[in-house]
Image (cartoon, rainbow, N blue to C red; front, top):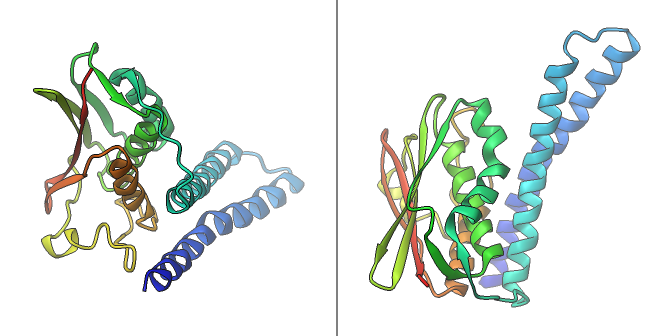
Length: 229
């Protein structure tokens, strides 16, 4: 049953990998024909699209490689005390080009001196995926809030958006490997649903669980807790 579930997931990923590569190939043909004809007025626009397609394909490929590591138990956990704001900045930098395109504002609501005990690479991967999802499902001009609250010996980190939200019946499907739930974003962005499954599996390696709150038309909130230092 597990093998059948993985096979289904791989077929979904293979299908979604076609989208950015098809875009790259088709757009490259257009650029090549325009250059040969001496037409350069749309070159900057084409270059921006080429970068977007490349980033989409790269992000999905990295998620696939990371997930394969989790499945093969080859993930090496290195716990250390890290500054939350530094990890957030690194994660934000990877999704900011997409946020800028959609005029989405990313704001912080936590103290700069907050430190947590975690694996910095894993936390960066989790935040990158949660922020990427938030950008994907938030309309133009929306807001994404990254928050952190201290409760005794833990810090709860949250990524909240003002997006389309998730229907209650679909919340149960978010982390199912046999039928990962995914829909196109507000700008028709594609996705395989692998990112959230990866977040769940990585957080479990850190002894944490991901929580979801969502309301259709008002947005979603993904959160998890990690030890403080």
